[in-house]
Each structure stands twice: as C-alpha cells, then as structure tokens.
Length: 128
Image 1 (cartoon, helix red, strand yellow):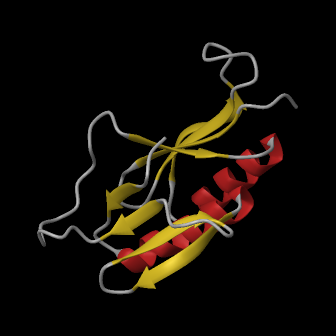
Image 2 (cartoon, helix red, strand yellow):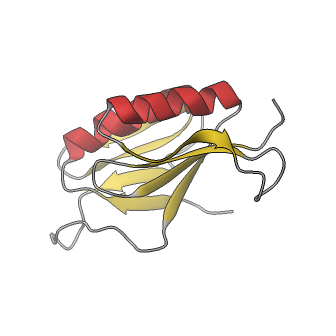
C-alpha cells in the first residue's frame, strides 16, 4: 500500500476546484490547504494521501507519461457523479463511465484529465 501520491499543478486554485468536485462523490475530503504550496485530500478521519502541489523546485509542473491517479468509488453512481464533476470543473474526457470487462467483469470506470493534464481514473470494482 502506498503512503501518499503527489502530482504537480501550475494553477492550484483551478486544481482545487477540480479535486474538490471529483472528491466529493468519492468520499474524499480536503484535509490541508496551503494556498501557495498545495492541498492534501483523503478519506474522512484518515490522513491526506493525495497531494496536489506546486513543484518544490519552482519549475513548471508537467504530466508524467504512463502515470494514472486511480481514485476508488464505492458505487457505480459515484463514478458517474465524479466524472460529471470532473467535466464541470475543467476536466477533459479520456473515457466516459462504463464497464471495462477486459480488466475484470465488475470494473466500472471513467478516465479524465485534470486541468493540468494529469490522467485520473475513477473506478468501482464492485458489482452493480
């Protein structure tokens, strides 16, 4: 299991709107917000495990080729709601919600790009 995941952003306010919207249907809450440095999200009662930050080296944030942030949803409707929030908050469609049976029979997911271009998968592994 991982401790945390960090992705860079060039516009923290825009990224915050995106991840606030996407996180809500997934049960992710904003734990820490440093307006000039970044913000940390996680489950209620947990610690921040997803950090959106301005790169420490002061260089522009860039998208890592082959990197995908996988956010787990408890239900398929939560995938749909998070996808809709992504689209409403500057996200770009990379694959509408639906079954991806080539992964496994209950893999219901959607793929988006956040406003900085990071690839995000929103997935429910449970049956309908």
